[in-house]
Length: 319
Image (cartoon, rainbow, N blue to C red; front, top):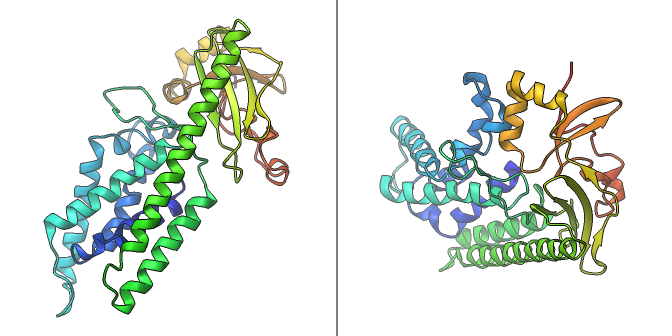
């Protein structure tokens, strides 16, 4: 999920009432909601590749309290250096930690909803988890979050009792929106798996990817033990299965050689839920089926399709 959404989610948690728990609590909620993405600088200091490290240890279950403790420690130092003026809320370490912990936990939860996935048990476990429910940037999120933040903030300034209630209401609306999309994606994936089975294809993985803007549509991707294909799913047209099938080509000698020789290929495979080998311009590439020509789908608005970048998530297998 984009960091604007994470920041808004942290601010909404603060407006729900957490900002009253301690001095600097609203700052803690916003910082905490973004803290797990500190892994972006990991490749600068550690022998890791971004694609394998991002959404790994700092997003894992054990990483949440550590991230919260780090944010609270920074705020404690700030409070010692810049004490609050007389009459400002008191700095309360315990309640602040709880508020920041909730904000940090919101980050992997929101990331789990996207198709990119989260490694909740990294580095002990290598499985990636995803609800395949929300596009990485979602305009409905923004409307709900901003409405709750602004509405409650005005009530706080006016001195209303239960000023955090609008934020709480919009938080419930957001959870209902999330639940609806999780259920819709699960239904789309079950429908495609059943349709494939009727055609004699036993799918191993089916992913329903929400496109930009059209949150009710799904771009479908499926794979069996030997081949892969695509399709679409929408409320109006139901399931659409594309007739074209392609081999996975994971037995390609160029791929097998690159996997042995290059760390970036192994890192990509560690992260990839649907790896395939494709040819582009006469050259072999390792890519992930979820994102291979993802913007070519009819479920993507044409204005975005024509401007979408090409070549993302493509690892060349030869120099």
